[in-house]
Length: 589
Image 1: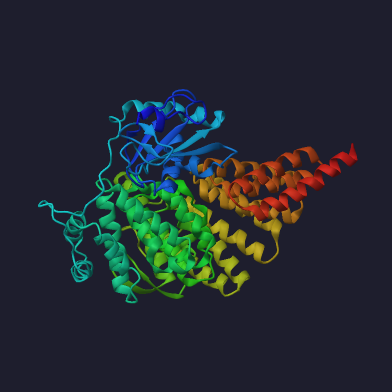
Image 2: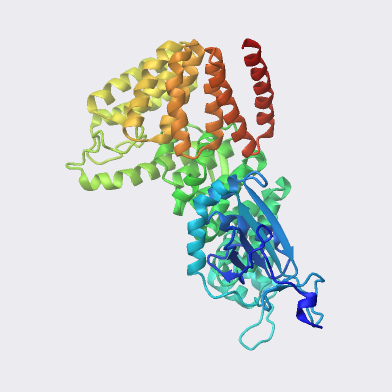
């Protein structure tokens, strides 16, 4: 039978331009895929030779279309921002499509091409990078070999469960990697151990599975990609999440951040499931210890918010994770937890520890300050670390933290702890008096960040006592210091407090500049949730001031952001309010 009668040339489904054979490209994240780009319309396509990984292929195509800008990719919506099409029964060898599903020899054709075409305004941002990657890519992809699990002799090798269990118990990573290279079932055998009732076995399996998968990610991307998908699917089931699935994904990212780093956002997206939060924090702490920017670039405010959780385990893991990241933005918040005596148990990557939130907070403060003080120590003379340029963001709770430090500063830090204890006991007047004494010492010694921290505490105490006007001055002084030292996260937190004060005082004109500054910062930090929140707040102020058209614009933008991030309940509430506001505007014309 002639080829032309039972097969067709692959054409772009969007513009009918003939397509080139897919090419291999790095990094291979979720499988052995080939990649291509339509020269006619700029659509991209990904080839899955098995036909069983279509979901992963679509994700890869979306990421490829965005030139691996995964922040952009996760924010796009089908039909609104891109179109997708699937063409099945594609054979990469002949570069033909067989509508019947079988080639001329009767063999099954399983391959498929997943297409993504971004809308023009989105594609303009990424298309040049995609074209350049195609030009630099390898030769057209050849048929991909299925892993056989054979050794050098060509015979199948299978390691027993006992062999795997023994290596996992000894945390023998090199042995497990060698076994997994020769036997493709080793990963599954390690995976079964993460469901063990014994905690030590579970954690050993988490560490080993993440490390072995990371080592195989480039040589066996299909196998590791399948594992990552299974873990992510299981993580979306709260019943399975408690059995180590999230932690395993975190370990794989820790070992292969360039390949799987974009999945940090997916992990953060699971925070709506409260039982999963401890696992999420552990995974982020492990990743952030080596690659803090990877976690911070995905999202950061949710971690700070969890420091105020009512659950000791959540507070403790949050402070542990932020300490591992050496996050100076969290230093003030970590300090507040140093006197927290609530107990918890946690696995720290080496052993299971029975500790308190306060102990973990003190460790976090030490990690952060050691990281910030190191470059300063090289510049300091006579051990004086109290210049304004010091990167500390709150009083050090360690007595004599820097050799030769001013005794008055050490005394002030002790008084700070005493004041904080009084505050936690509800003795607000005594705490205020003590904090004022501490502030006077830090002022005289030129400890700018400590001044900021104490002023924030004083403002919080005034709020507790219902004296909103008195809180403004200390908050604004804290804000000025945070702005000067370009601490964006702390600046936003203080701006939120000042906004709340002005709203309580109903001083609507005064609150707007703080809203706009906060919006500017969270947009720089790519915090979509807070951007939507501030836009809605700005719109509410405009409505109170009678500027209805401006209010409509703010509500509309906020509603779109909430809808794009999947917060449908909030988006629907705003949509109802927008309808009412439009009717009001029409009625007043």
